[in-house]
Image 1 (cartoon, rainbow, N blue to C red):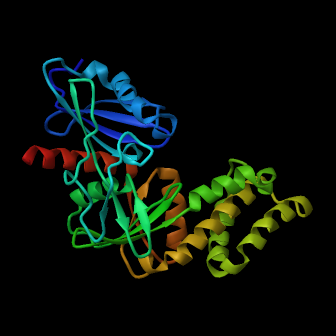
Image 2: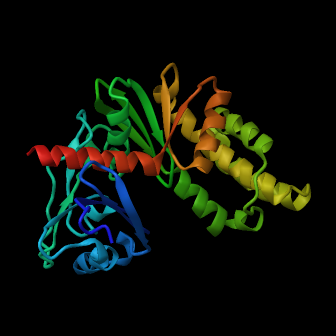
Image 3: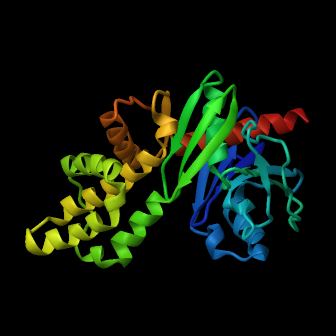
Length: 302
């Protein structure tokens, strides 16, 4: 299936999941295949097998298929460490690819590097390809890009370069607090938008009271009947508000783009709109694919 048309394969390899896009020479997606064999479940000698299991139906014996990969596959705990490009710099495309040794003669694997910042110390891996994709479609963009997730990135863009960035562990803190703290008894999967917006302001203005206000959610659920949907939204709002207070230099007075999934973009858009910011939205999956396509065309030039 598609074998005669397959020119290369784009791979987004995260901690939990592996996604491969079967690509034509002009950048058209012929097929998409997914696996739960993310970096976190593999040893370094298991990556090639996991990849071949996923894409073998699209490989030819008489053709070496380029595989361009981004994400945690290039981490220190991944297939082969791909290193970092220091900012200020353009998001990496074909520059400084890392090529792991492979046993299967049908593939040649190219892993994109991440990006790093020395002062203050910070790193990103995977987000740089989403940024590359957005800039490929919007080469004149100047402003800030927010990439919300487990570790949310705020990135300053100028003249096509990543100038600086900061990482906020907002998503990870929400997960830990909601599932492994006393608040696990007070929250659920529901949502209350009004409570969220109110708590964003509270998180921004009362950062010094955050831990007290978080316990207040538990006390309110016991004494005042605070509903789990309300508590969930308040917890998220407090943490995102705290983040916005720290990232104020990125969004205040700047054009802001949010790159993410729809649900989390909804939350960040609502929080930023409350502050008078009207962000542009871009889908993370689409942007990472555009970034990988840009890398492929750069590789072809070399």
